[in-house]
Length: 309
Image (cartoon, helix red, strand yellow):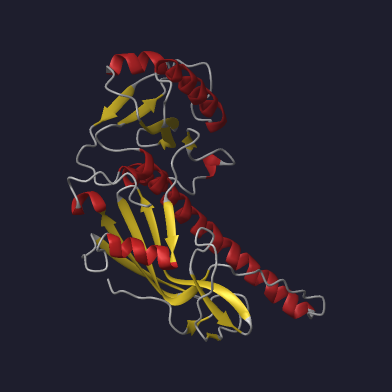
């Protein structure tokens, strides 16, 4: 990974149709706690820009390197189209419909990534349990209906909290289609200590449970997120939540600009080969390269709970 800081580049946003050059790079005095990126001057305006974004989910680090600087304090550019011709209005509606479909696809990917990061911030393979909760056919509610099964899952969580007051969990529902039942079941990661399987089943009350060994899993978040990705566009979810989670979970730390550079330098990630690299193109940011690192593998004897600070 090369050490890259903002130079002259294209403006990301604001004009949308005019990617003009950002010039006269100047640094200004400002509260560092409020500042996210580097400050540049352009056309008598000050913009915060960054060529890097770093997302720290405890020990897992994602580094986004942008070909063109991203503007962090971009203002929305509202435009009116009162004088458009009927033909142009038809074209604009078609463009909006196309964008809506694209936004839906992006929303699914974003949701999966957010869950992956949230889980990695709060759970580890050594101190967590991965439990699958299954409904049997003896229940007096519709086990194929998410609205009803969500209510029963919430009751289970309330019972579980009686035994574990500091319970933290993230759960993903999935439809059991392999055997043709179509019943809902839940994949849940939680922070409960060793507990006999029979006791958890008694607390569950609705059927069978299974506990998987995840000690060899590199990313607990990715392991759970794969279940979410299976049925992301399934219409049976309707407006029901695709993810159930406890409150007050730790969130990933997102760094830009100087803070991102400082983090990458501190952990020597500019000189370290990443575990995985991927790239994609964006209409405004150009080519975006994503590098993934595991700080725990780089420093196996060091506890990186505060790695994002």
